[in-house]
Image 1 (cartoon, one colour):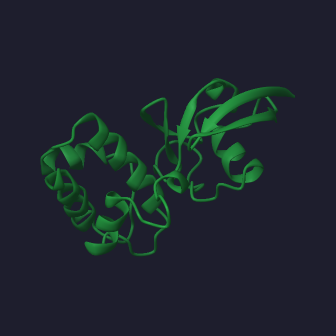
Image 2 (image 1 turned 180 degrees about the vertical axis):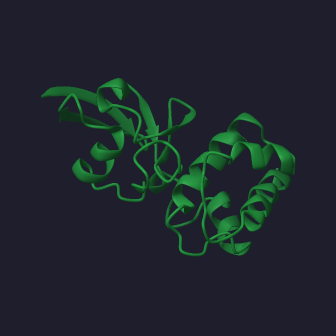
Length: 153
């Protein structure tokens, strides 16, 4: 076991981890941040996407020890004072949520995209979300939700 430091959703954590634990495992099983979903565990589906040091990453592919000292944002950190973030609201308003399993990863990937490019076009959004799989929506409503947030600013 080794103790690492993580800043998750602006809160500091010192946590003892095994060297083979992933960031996904630590978030879900050790810190009970279950909004980050466990999908394929191979980095193909995007359900486990979080933002680490400003970049969207598949938390199933990041060893917890690699995240030591890092700043992590999860879906739990999006809403403030019981108010959904604009991106979360847009997903609801545009019907971009069906079963909801992919939604946290889609939203975190979209947030990272909008942080980097506040006004992406549909093609850029589609490309930016290409690492996230949704089996319910057909992606159109997801792209519309992200575009609506981009047009708000």
